[in-house]
Amino acid sequence: MKTFHQIALVAIGIVLGTLGVAQSASAYPPGVGILAKNRSCSVCHVSNGPWSDEARTIIDVLDAQTHKSLRTPDGVFRLDVPRGETRTVLTVIGRQKGDPQPPRRNAWLYIDPTQIGTSALSKFAAGWDVNLPMSCRIVGDKLEGYEDAQLTVLPMTVRPTDAARDAELELQVMLTAGEAVKGSGSQGLISTLAVRKISLKVLER
Image (cartoon, rainbow, N blue to C red; front, side, top):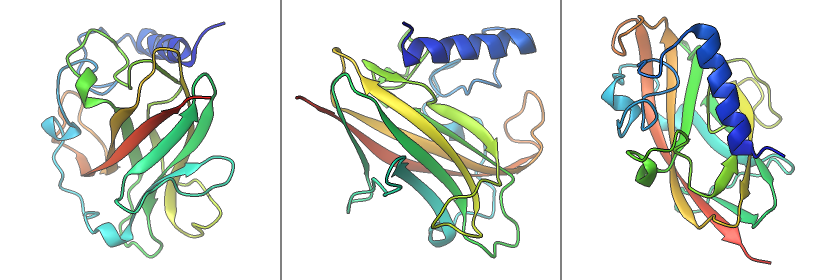
């Protein structure tokens, strides 16, 4: 049976093959540690959007079953998973209602900074299977408790294998509008960048 990691790599390969994109491409998948050794989205994309006010920006990670936030008092999202078992979370990104210029698309990437520069295609924490560590989605999803907010919501499932250890990730988020110019990360696209900390904890049974 294929792992989440293997399935994700196959899916990326299909996308690249369908689009005719070479391995040296600079557009998608993101160049943060995957097609390049860039440390952050800000290496290629300017943060010039109108969504920098944190009070109205929604960036949350919820347990998929209970819809409870995994945010701890220090602002870090903590994800505890028994070894060998799976846990699904919801990545929720958007803006509070009433925003006169809401973002049209949200992009995000879960990445372990210590994996940047390694030969692995996936830069998620080593030893963890994951099925959707990155995505870009048009705003318009609905979620109970966030009525009238402009949101994107997608699930991500993780599983710590025998090789998994506790890890610290970054959730790099881009709220965007406009249309990107091919080959340029600074033209056409209006974006605001934000980063959140994610703590992965392996529970031993």
